[in-house]
Structures are given as structure tokens and as C-alpha cells.
Image (cartoon, rainbow, N blue to C red; front, top):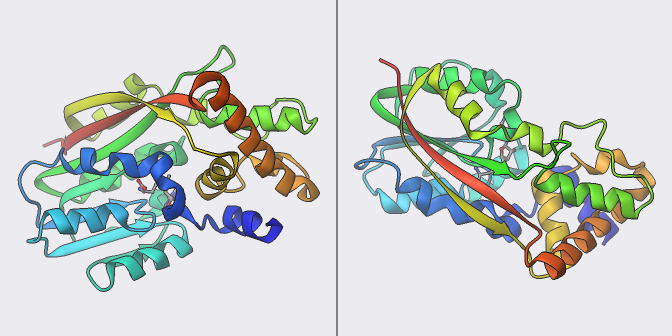
Amino acid sequence: MTEDILTRARTLSGYDDVSAVRQAQDHDWVLDQVPGAPSTVADLGCGTGALLDAALARWPGIVRTVGVDGNDGRVRRAGARLAGRAELLTADLLGLPPLEDRFDAVFMTSVLHWLHPDENRAFAWISAHLAPGGTFVLTTHHPVTDADGYGGEDVVAREALSALGYGDSLAGVVPMGVRARPAPTVRALLARHFTVTASEERHVPVRAESAARYRDFHASTFGTYFSRLVPDGRQEDFFSAVGRAAARRTAAHGEVYGITVRVWRATPLT
Ligand SMILES: C[S@@+](CC[C@H](N)C(=O)[O-])C[C@H]1O[C@@H](n2cnc3c(N)ncnc32)[C@H](O)[C@@H]1O
């Protein structure tokens, strides 16, 4: 088990097994935002390619599909899933080179908090690479934050740290409650490059049916982001404590935590 959970966290592997806990629930909602049938699509932070797969199934007339992700293992997994139907690139969304291409639709789902505080760089690139009349669809997460600014996965990580005797400070990482900016701030960042044409939110419970499943979800989604706060020899203990914290919170509240997810539809400024 040691090897499995640590490998999962270090490589962000196993995402397809656990993304139904949160991210995969949004895919139809995201595709529904695109008016008409796009011919060219790009997914930034495409993960293992599930959204592009769904886009290709929904719009058989797509002629060009591009996926970009910073994690090589995920790009390889996307390549296996999409088998020649998409061009896939391992690259940092904060340093994308200019392309000749202009896309009818660009997606970026469950990614923005990882780009904090440099989101503007990605937005500038996207705006420059949308075709006239093209659509940018992104989802953002907005956890309820406490008085210290912690929210979402922060509360699970703090509980796990505390259970292991490390206190509950997240000093050393930027809390998710900070990374996931409030919706008005996201709107202001978007407004530098886009006109927001639609936006809606829904409140979703994050839950997993067992401590082990939540442990795996955390490792595949957050990797070593929080676990770095404990020494190397306690890594496995940390992930187990995350699973136990999630199970305890679910027993007490019916969910690990609730989160507001917002979808945004935007077109480039003319
Ligand atoms: C939570 S996953 C979301 C994956 C997919 N969009 C989905 O909705 O299932 C976040 C993805 O963003 C990628 N990512 C985060 N920061 C990135 C960066 N700076 N450059 C490229 N990819 C990044 C991660 O590798 C990961 O695959």
C-alpha cells in the first residue's frame, strides 16, 4: 500500500478512478455552455482527456482537437484514451508558446486554482487563441472559507495534520481557500480579456463512500501539495489520516465539505 499511495501522489496517477468524486461531474454542464457545434477545440489542463472524449462524441464534426496538461502521465493517459483523435502536449499553462491556431471553443475545468496568482497569463493566451466569436468555458471552485481563509480541501488537510500531532497550520502552502478566488475576483480577472456572456453556479457536496476512496481521491488530485507539510517518513500516515478525516466529516455532516462550482462562458474582447 505504501508504494501505491505514494506513487499515486507523486505522479498524480489513478485520476480516472476517483475524478467522479468531483471533477467529472461537471463535464456535460461544461459542454452545454458552447453555442452550436465547434470545429476546433482545445482543453487546457486536460488531465486524462475525458472532457475531450465527451466533446468528440457530442460534436462528430470536430476537425481539430488539442489537449494540454502539465503532467506527463496524464497526457500519456489522454493519448491512450483519445488514440490519434487529438493532439496532446505536455506544457505549463503559464508559459504556453504562441500558436497559429484559433479555436472555436477553449475549455479549462477545475484548473484555475492551480494557476494562482498568475491566472492572467493563461487568460491572455486563451483570448489570443480564440477564433472570432469563439467561446471560452471554464469552471472555478469556491469553497466556503472560515475566518482564517481556509476552505475546501484545507479543512481535511488541517484535520489530518492535527491528528498526526503537527497542529493544524498550513504555513508553507497557499491554502485552497486563497487559491480558489471569490467569484467577483475571477470575474474581474476575466474582464481584462473577455466579455462574460453567461455564468451559473451550483453547490455540490464532496463525498466519498469510504476513507480509502477519499485518500485515493486526495492523492490523485492534490498529489503531495499538502503532504509536503509532514516529514518523508510520515507521508503514508498523512494520506491515511486524510481518509479518516474525510470519513469522520462525512459521518458528522453527510459530506466531507460542500463547495460552490461556477461555470463561466466568455468571448474575447473585440
Ligand atoms: C483537477 S485536474 C482537472 C483535470 C480536467 N480538466 C478535469 O476537469 O477533470 C487539474 C489539472 O490541471 C493540470 N495543471 C495544473 N496546473 C497546471 C499548469 N501550470 N500547467 C499545465 N497543467 C496544469 C494538472 O496537471 C491537472 O491535470
